[in-house]
Structure formats: structure tokens, C-alpha cells
Image (cartoon, rainbow, N blue to C red; front, side):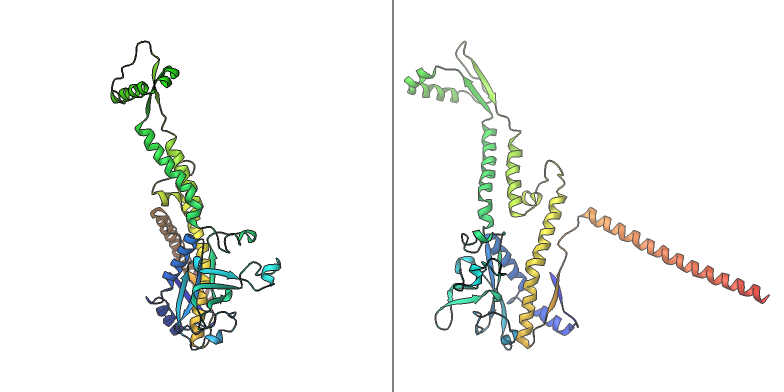
Length: 362
């Protein structure tokens, strides 16, 4: 969750009204932000567009004057999948030709296919109205290849997930066929009479298993080869570990098991995950909430800037909670002792002053 307050003088009635409205089921900003992050990961990019009840706001022009929203009814945001979007640049604009420009290679407008204006033309939305985020950073030179979007999580993990599943499947196959029976033979004769060779091998398989008795010709060099399974688990977990690194998920959280190897407590991975979640809040979600509140107040007559703060991401373990309580108790004890010491010093000072006064009178 998050809290917010107006910049400058606080208005409790306004905060209470907005807090109730943005968490209503029809508006629910939290669900919209969750969907926005989900689409970003799933499709490589996602866009949030403001929605108004009567669809009477022209979003093809830059959002500079919030006064144009006065009297409008803002009903929330909609999240658009990138398949319905197409970037559009102004011809011969700085966005296309000037690498020193702030908005170089940033589309001026986005066309939303399937949505049309009053004239039946595909709806065009200026970049100042929207929130557009990519799953991972994409270099300017590669953005046209991704249609100004980016690689998705499924695209990034497909090869690694396939490799991990292959390792897991091969491990079970090796376990079932751990012991291989090898016997020397004349390969040329077997090739000359393949039918006899097939029957012989089939008969050997039918009359032997890992715990049975194998009958072999006299003086034959027959032996058993064992497959070593000790490397199967590290290979499989290594594939899943790389997968977790690609999608920013701690291995213990993904695999529901403790890590192996160096620093196998998993604390570092969990802390790093919490830091990334905090960065997501600060860099992506806070601007969304701020813009939401600004548009809502602009619709009421006057846009108001807000400070937004999200709750803590890092959830302490039982041990960490105990350590926190211990440190708090120590601090309280220190302050209590300091306060008691202060009172004792005041009392001693008063007694000394009284004693000096009595001596003077005597």
C-alpha cells in the first residue's frame, strides 16, 4: 500500500476523499498498477492511458494545461497490450534526427488500433498523456527492431527453461538406466546378419535387469558400466539459477528450496529482490499515483501536487524481528537510565544548593 499528502498545506478532507475514491472497486489503482507490471513482463512493454467517462478529452495534443480537464470525470487508467500499439513520429522531427534531443527515438504519438475518434480515425495519443514502460532497457539503435518495445520475460527465459527441463528429464532417465551392460562382439558379423543381432539383443534384455543374472558366452569380455548421478543435480539447479537471475526472482523463492554452494543462506538474493521491488515503486509506481491524484484534482477544478510514499518491501524474518525488538529494548533502557540519571543529577544539585544556602544563613 501507499500513503499520500498534498505538497505544502495538508488538507485532511481532500486526502480522505481521494483515498476512498482511488481504492473503490471501479477505480482501484492498485489492481491497475499490478496489471501494468504484469503486461510489461509478459509482453516486453505496457502502456497506461487515462480514461474519461464521456471520452470527450482530446489526447492527441500535449498535456500542458491541466485546466482543460475541469469538469471532466476521470474514471481511471486502462492498460494496453503492445500488440494494439503503433509508434508515430512527426516527419523530419528532432525525435528522429537529433541524437542530442531529450526525446530522441521517443515516439511523439501512439496509435491505438481498434479505438477510433468521432471521425472514425484511429485514435492518436500524445506521449505526455501516457505511462509507457519496457521490461528491460533497450538501446536506441535496437528499438526499431522491437517496435519501440522490448524483450519479454517468456522470450528471455525460454531457452534457459528448456535447458533446465532437459537436464531434469535426462536425470530421471539416467536414474532408470544407471547400469549399462557392455559385451564385446564382432560388429561386421552383426551388420551382415542384422535380424539375428536384433533377436540376440532383445533376448539379452528380456533375460536380464539391474538385479538379475546375465548369461554371457564363455571367454567373453562382458562388463557393467555405471553412470554417475552426482553431477545431475548441480547441472539442473544451475540452469534454474540462471533463469532466476534473468527474471529477477530469488532462487529460494522460485524453487522453494535452500540454495547450495557459497553463501547458501539466500539472504543476499532476498535483499537484492527487495531492493529491486523498492526501485520499481520509486521509479514507476510513484509517478503513476502522483499523476492520478493530479488529474483527479484537476477535474475538480485545481490540480494539486502530492507526495507519495509506499510501504516497506523488505519483510524481516523471525530472527531479524527478534533482533529489532532487542535493539529497541536496549534503546529504551538507555533512554530510561539517562532520564533517571538526569533526575538524580537535578536532585543532587538541588540538595547541594540547599546545603550551601543553609551554611550561609548559619
